[in-house]
Structures are given as structure tokens and as C-alpha cells.
Length: 215
Image (cartoon, rainbow, N blue to C red; front, side):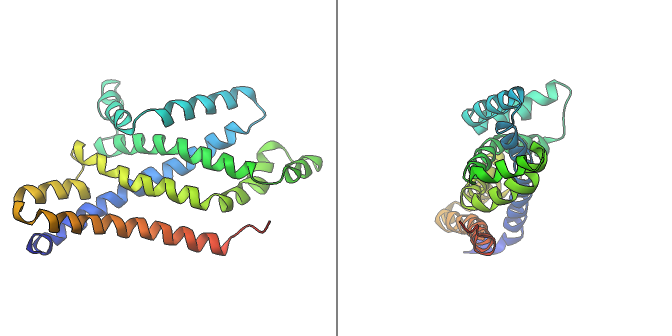
């Protein structure tokens, strides 16, 4: 236990960095994924084509490959937001493809009559989405969205290989310095990840109970 208690400040800093990665890439994924999800349902063919291409490319490309592309590729193109934000872009763009599919399934789960009623009173597509369909869709897709963000939490560990001092990076350092306490260190860091995942699950459960859609 000494390895954990003596290095508690480093471990907490590591998990703080993990939370920063999770929050920044999660917000990017939520905003971009919602936009792509709306594009897939748009009556404009070119927007649907863009959305299909986006989901096909980013959902089927390994996250590590995307991180390598943003980490090494963007600076070569003269675009460099710094290591942290380059990795955040990769995680956000990758996760947005899964968010968009969840949003699309939520909108498709709403009775068709509601969209037809909105159109019958003259509401354009954008207003129908933002005022009628999306608010209900978000309430319908809380469980799948929670699963997406739980996966994102675990995916943040890939940043350790690129020098971002998040929790897994701290784990590697502690294992090198305290080889006799490996099991304790593994268990301690794993408990930190489990706490984050359980908080996401608990928050999703509360949201789902409070804003459940009555069918």
C-alpha cells in the first residue's frame, strides 16, 4: 500500500488529466455526433452522404490510428494544437461516430406522426429537429450514450503512450519504481477507473429516471 499512499498526489493528478481528456473529447463528440446524426436524417442528399461517409470512416478506423494521424500528421500540415488537444481531437472525432448512431436511433424511435404533425403546421426541418425530435431522442438514448462515454473513459488510457500524464501513464511509472507492489498498484488504479465509470452509470440512471419518455 505504500506505493499508493506515498504517491497519492501523483495518482490524483493522473486521474485529473484523465477527466480532462474525458470531458474535452466527450463534449466534442456530443456536439459533433449530434450534428452528424441530424445530417443522416436530413432531407438533403449531400448532407446524408457526408454523414454516412463520416460514420463509415471514423467508426471503422482504430482509435490508435486516428491518434497517430493527429499526433504526427497534423503538425506536418502546419496544424498543431499541442499534444493534448491533438489527441482530444482524435478521441472526439472517433466517439462522435458512435454518438451520431445513438442519436439517429433515438430519433427513429419517435412515432412518425410527431414529425408529420410538425411539418403540417409549417415547421421547417431544423425547427422540427431542435424543438420536437432531438429533446425526446436524447431522453430515449441515455443508456447507449452512457455506454459510449464509458468506452471513451477506458480509451483515454491510450494517451499514456503519447506522454500525456493521465492515470495509466502514472500506473506505468509506479510499476517501474515499485516492482514489488504491482498487484496493489494495479488494483488501486483500476478502482479509480471503476469509480469514474460508476459515476457515469449513476448519472445516466438518474437522468433516465427523471426524464423518462412516456410511450
